[in-house]
Image (cartoon, rainbow, N blue to C red; front, side, top):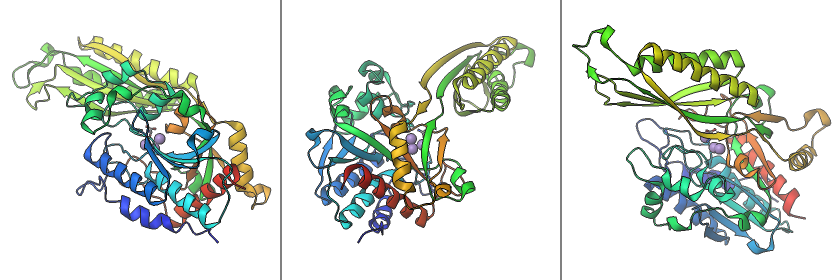
Length: 412
Ligand code: HGY
Ligand code: MN
Ligand code: MN
Ligand code: MN
């Protein structure tokens, strides 16, 4: 019985069109928007269609329970359904769909569950709308206070509480949820690999070892708005120049430190073709295999930015908007996954263990409960792009691996 992962394909086809932009082919599933609501409705339908106990927690995360949630020591699996602007189809949804398909697989194997099992969709993991990643899991883990959450606003000035209320949820409920976390014994998140390690090693599935330390810093370059056609170059205080030089400095510092640094988002005021900007606001995303390297990059970029700003008579404010320290996934749980998945392989064919520069809800929760991650091969490594891809048989391999892991952890 079992070992087909067959329900994956049907669920995938149902979810695929939701929030997909017709022109770019990318996904625009932003927290608390219509596309998010459609994804949530899909999750609820999958849960109730399987006779699971469906609930939405105080932070808007969706849970589907098999067994008694109050019994404790639950095994939880899942991921997120929201996306970055024009993101790919797999980042997040692969983990959620695979969770349901893995449960179907376990039911086909007629296993007996010895622990409660829950499937979860964590809200607002990408932070595309309010600028902070992993809001649903950070709130639940108490890593984001209610006050901080209430101060989050989107590009239209809509606050997070306003968006939550507009989506029909109660913003006054949001906050830490230690009781919920205390009932969880292990969280395993399956995710498309956002890199090429598995492609290079020739493996379909891998196990995460760690998440690199990473963060987001906002650089506000303030100059002087003026006429683009009549202002002499020597009379300008143009923040765009300082910003441009800082972007190049980020690439230089990252290369020197063996890290990564990206200025992927910028806002310009007044944003007129014929107006020298008064304000250029750029966001730096930087990540490195260790804290010292990350510090080297960020400090180097900030130092260079201040020099460039001074040279152009421009003021600079740098604000650290978010930071996630290195996450070493729980060694015991990670080794348990290796044992479970490696059982059919000779020693040299063990499932690979690999680090990642991408942040995940499993990383946020690792400070509160034992967490682990499974990665599914992504042949090009491309992610956060419509080109993101995972082959069908690799996705099914991921479902079967997740089913094996859940069976090993929660069944007999
Ligand atoms: O940004 C990240 O690493 C994650 O995809 N939210
Ligand atoms: Mn992502
Ligand atoms: Mn993700
Ligand atoms: Mn993630």
